[in-house]
Length: 306
Image 1 (cartoon, rainbow, N blue to C red):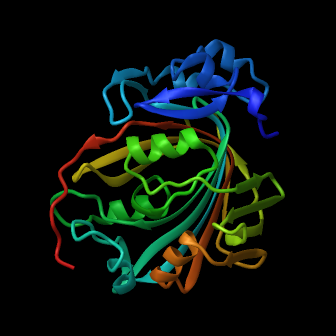
Image 2 (image 1 turned 180 degrees about the vertical axis):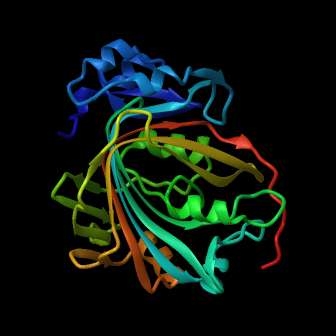
């Protein structure tokens, strides 16, 4: 349920006042949560994953903050598609190169996120991203490619990352360097259906998804932990942001029947069209998971020939 004006308050975030829910996790803990209290939330299946990740205080573009940012209950959906490397390279900075699964073939994705219990309170998010080679010396090894395709470790460059709340936008844009803006964004994921709708500036459809949720497999906490490294620039310098996902219930399908992706009009739609995707490879849905999102750190990114 959306908060009314009297249920919110203003919080300072690096000199910017952002609206947050009164009595919410950010209001109560300011990123320094009481894990025992959060474990009592019936929506949270456990907090053992987070006890192994002590928070540290760091300086950042949004002021002093604690990292990682914890997401105690979340769900996600991702469509992975084939696209021509030539089209992908037109949208990548020269320092990054697409992850190719064959000559001239790269991977792009559309993702939707729902964060039900989080250090910065409930919000939803969507993304258009490109799978890229890890920014390091040497050629991409076979095992890097296999790990990426199995979602164990992926490196990415994000073109669009709209969110539903102000605090998520300010932290993501100013603190992480991501292309974030606030819009109306609905994401609902359960064991039977996956639906999402991202609104454009006029309230119409930017992107929307309606799909049957793939059969889910449950995993004990800590058994399946995947990682994602995202590259961004902050004040002209390259940074890498690590996120670690504790997968609790997830499933994958390579069948495209029952998946309806509407590409409407807006920033996400424009970004997706520019990549010229032509085939959906697989559809991944995680109906329950947890996430630790670390603050970005400076990284060495070497120029590559396009």
